[in-house]
Length: 368
Image (tube, rainbow, N blue to C red; front, side, top):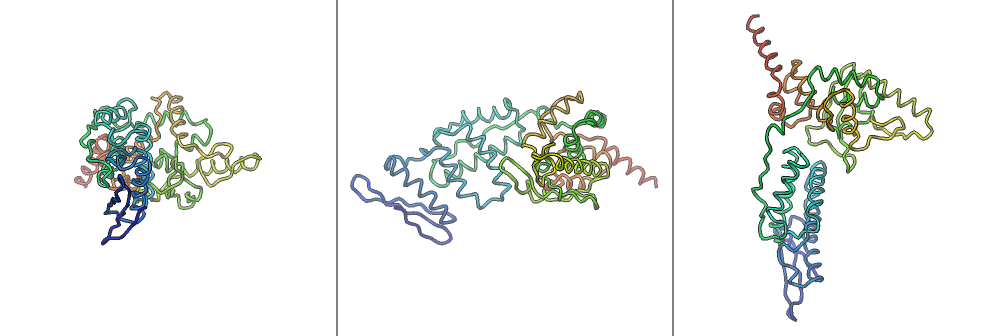
């Protein structure tokens, strides 16, 4: 049976057990809360019941079992958006390492897993960095709590050719080509593209939009949440909460789309009522990857390279804002970036037109 006590600011567990007729005790401290200490103690007691003291050798715990404990210890100390991000990475890790004991996850196997993500599945380096960061958190936590001797996965190579990572966006002519192609498309498809193109919001933010987020009078769109596979949650970061000014073209499209929805609601007995903006003709909200699926088809119909990505329009919005003369601070705020540096490092090198516009303004300033 486990006993718990607080020592200073931390908690510890003490577990008594019988080893060959002798009464012995295992103890472990340093837990931030009693709940963390209990979660760790439960694992130890389960091992004692299943296999005695021999089952307590470091690294014998299954990856999925330690992940469960790791989450119980850390979930309450992270923002909800961080928990969502962590879970996404953990699902990828579980797909590969479920059933592995911690001490059986070899460095070479893990490097091959990273390589597959980078080059076979073709994830962006930033995405793989986040998945690897989650793995490091899990393994370091196991070391810290005496479940593993040491972390053998440090220093794994995560590199990708810059050409592979080249940011993709549409130029002005391609934007016109896409808009012409969707002119006669279903209104929900057309409004989705125009909203993404005119605001630069993320796919999850688009899916989380309610009609109450649109202020038709003041011409603004409020980003207050995102919808992921886990449901509704806060934006990606604090800077993700934002109010975006929108222009008349988008306002008019949204008004027409709202009227279309209200008409469908009147004439269709089985219409699904909800607060969501982006729904189909039956009121069914977009499934998680519907924007990406639609983009691939719409790009193909427009005779453009089909990409299953809505981020293409986010990049396009940022580049075209800069090329039209918008300052970097305005663009950064619209995108919900944590800092101007992120915006500058991502976009300024791909838009020489912005530099030309800036130099023209400087030249005019000197002349006047």
